[in-house]
Length: 241
Image 1 (cartoon, rainbow, N blue to C red):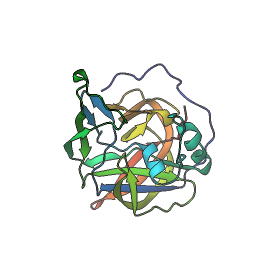
Image 2: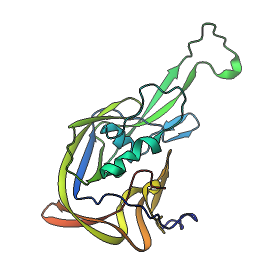
Image 3: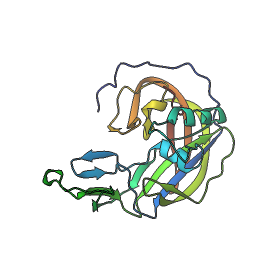
Image 4: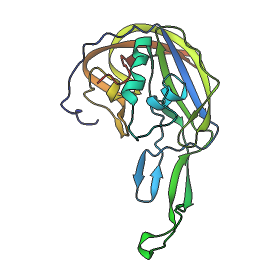
């Protein structure tokens, strides 16, 4: 198990709309997907997950300006209004993922090009992207009924992905652990332990989080074959901290 997460606030008193509807979402890539989760020397690697902020933008819940004069993120301003609407989506965990390593070779486009030997010109490197056919799963919760598009676009290449959405039973409840991936920035109370952490910009994601005492959230029931399974989803809101 991972060590206890940081010395941060153990709770935030904040009113948000109670969720009344839950949707189980399966995502299947139809194109190669790339976003720079981490850079290791000449390799830019795509993590085997999909950030919930990326999903919020892909579903057109949050809108970013077409043109930005400065490269300054506006997640808090663009995502927080969704809390007033009572909608939330969790990060998507992998069900079946494969990678492909691609090499890129680019040149800059100045009017006057010089080629100093020490610069290693032209620029080159590798991209580790996700293959088509990779599949993910996540949950969306809402105060009012939601509709979803059959396809969305993700990543730096605006890659196409297909959605399969199923409404599942939802009830208010408490729990001490959750098997899904959660966004630390969106939790009112930090987990005590977790099995894995992805330190991605702009926030950290953790999986199989556990709390020292019961926290508020929701219990969902889903069909797996002939059996009904129950999972606990902790209360979350976009950019809660």
